[in-house]
Image 1 (cartoon, rainbow, N blue to C red):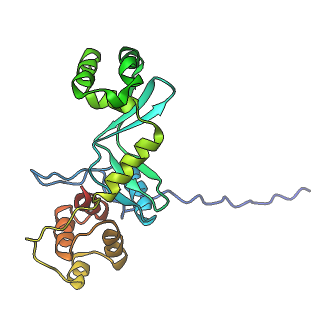
Image 2: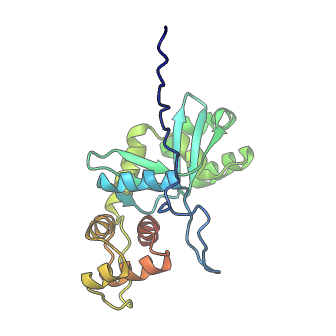
Length: 216
């Protein structure tokens, strides 16, 4: 007679959403200028901050070349510099075809050193682009890197507002910042404790947005 053996069913744990995860739709006060980032972007920014990257101010436009005529243009980017002189750029990249512009301005590019601003402006207007667009075409990677280095040396991090009352590190901790948070913020900014406390409260106690505010 065959023996029937009962095999217990394995219990499969249910997936439970972490109650501690922040809501994607946090309430923001009216009139606030806080920039809201997705959860994935927050994680990416936090990881970059831990790498010791420094934010570079004063850059309004970044052009990335691809081939002879296609460029990726990032307007109003956020640029970070690593210790090895590498750069990381955040922003929306748009494709611009500079082929037509390059053909129309070939004479200017051949003698870019002798081109005057009026000529550059006229060529740019004919192509529907700015003089800066035209000038960017003639820049090689070394020149672009030199521009980034100059911007970094010119004063990257925003200075604290002297009118903000000073605060102690204990006050920062009482407000909800951990010592790791304080260290991360100070590694990215030159802000005083008072400025950090003010920005932290204004950004609903979000560390990443606090850093972005202090370096914007």
